[in-house]
Length: 491
Image (tube, rainbow, N blue to C red; front, side, top):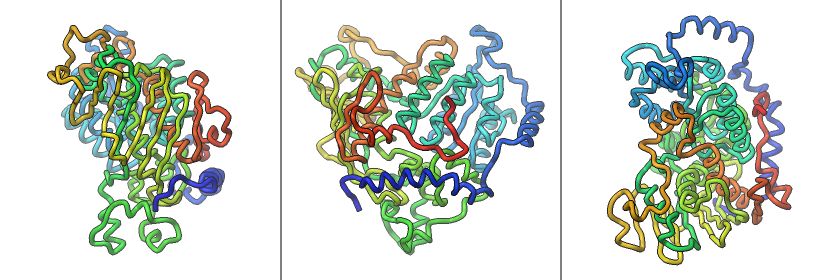
């Protein structure tokens, strides 16, 4: 199943398929949702029935209640947890929810209204209607990667402060657009790289930044490999294929034209607006196991384990390296991939070597036993490793406690009392969050460039300041993706 890299022909097929999208979209008119005059009038009428909620911006930073009003978009994997954290904050009120799946939307509205013991949460199927509300201060975006660019730019242009999930976007070009929109519209951005709000990760980074391990020579970042059936849809599919037992990795072997393909393709469920869900990505037949939660295992909509986790452990690596606004100048990656047209086609195993300033080498790996999961900085005088499961170091004296002793904190990093708490506080103060948009952008770049190296089979040379690939037109084309009509990324 696995090959060292996709062939050039496979990469060309992605672009050819993209060019056919406008013709394919006519086959899906029954699922389309156009933004027309009737919907506009419907929206205007609905606005008259909105609950009376006054945003904090009306009163300025010293509003009587100082309560931030929030709308949430996406109720799949991250949405419920993020929203629950916001609901726990007394100075934040969740007033609206949006999702393209009617069942998900109903669950979201019910959870929010049950918390407040009222019926004030407004339901939306179109994010544009929510963003048009002047009484909403901020939005939480927890949607598939292929929607990050459009939603984040639209929210910024609507002057909404944004809590957005990692990675920042599906491509570097989309990330650049998000950074510009956030900066130009002067909105507050918090990335869901919540490890920065945990004491042990800050402690580890402070040890490195304070010089206690000496000059950094090597950084190892261990990420997951393979695929996970987060939506738990694989058993149903395997049963349909006559498999009483099986591994979800079977989905990485099923391709169009195979006997199994006809059994996994179906019409979209009535409750899901599938055409809009696909949105700017390539249109393809509905396959239940690559939609909710599992969209990350197909490069049409996600980035596999590499891009799913780069915003966590590489983000922490950069924090300790003081690279929040810089990055590698050279990367070379090798990976094992299913067929380009398989249901799940993201890398099952990968290894990337990146060269950073000051002769630092970073290894990013998934599925390689020599690279421990988490982040490890290795210096001339010692090493530090941190992960969600623990903390370790070459110096036993550094192990005790969640925080570094005050006398060792030569460099004191940003302290956050909680990721959502930090976001709300920064909305009020208008100060940067612990993971602002620029940080999210630079944290994800090694993952994007490493993937491009794996797909092309070539070493990538990166101009950190100009943010462009040097002397490789083919690789440069993969910095962006064509959009399916009529979707466009706002300038």
